[in-house]
Figure (cartoon, rainbow over the protein chains, first blue to last red):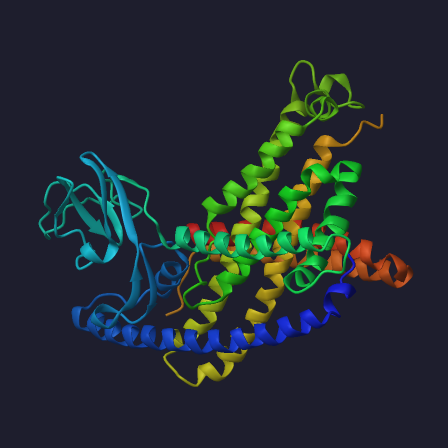
Length: 386
Length: 69
């Protein structure tokens, strides 16, 4: 991996300064956000003490921050809340119901029934369900042992926070790479300029250090996919690190998104696989016959291997990015957990340090996802040397 | 105030395993680079891929610990 070329460019210095600037802002905003959480925690604890309930569960707060939702939350709670409500699209029994999430957010405990498109619905913790029979405490749902309502729910096709983040990142990618492609068309055979010059090292990096070593002379067919994968994962990792509006959506830390990315690699691998690949899976050469014939032990193991590769891809990206987000939030939450502002002297510098590591991890995970995809495709399309 | 479940211990054990694994990979890669500095780029790539595989196992542990809190 020829990193020197990347790290010595003027662009990289500019990026570093910009990243540090963003980080400074982000830490400030996060501190403000946590201030609210701190206040909420105090009031909640006071309330809980008054009611004799248990204390605020900080892991719930963290999981709420990294989860998908029907609004883009900035800061504040209750009447002081600053958030962008997002459109909710529900395919109910009575037809497609569309409304803004803010319309029915007053009650999130499933105590009020509202009607959309002639269908009765309730809102429980930001999710929409059909109401069941009324309980003694005024709610219309029943919980199972995992505290998830057992009620039927309409098919939720909403533009949620993650979907909007996806739209934003796709628009960004289209603008950036549209400009770059135009640059290449305009300056055929000439030195790159502007945005094109900024991104050329990365495109060449994906071609020379990821695609060519893994795919050999067949790299040209798969290069568009690998470039798309690399830049999509990378830009979403970076946007996820910005806690203010265009970012902070934890898109690559959403298992559904990584599932689709891994599925892309899986389909490409399966469709393009040659006979030698399937022969290696179902009739591995050089393996004693008794491992294959009465009980097909090797074929089963090899076939599980084929399925395990995209699953490992999926889990790796999801878990890495989610773990990064949780780590940053958990370090900030130490201030709330230990109920002392002085802890911030320790936790804020540590959060800056972890955020810098996350910048590296964001690039590294995009690189690893792409190189492993290239490796798996390469295994499937390589020529038989036996 | 400190509370938890056995899943936390599991996540810790996974972290020990990954720590040993990544330590081995990093150490051996450094030995390799020291012996043959001109192969540093290739060794780095292979090292990162291997580290990613080890990483994933530890993160499986973390995810399971979170899901079964």
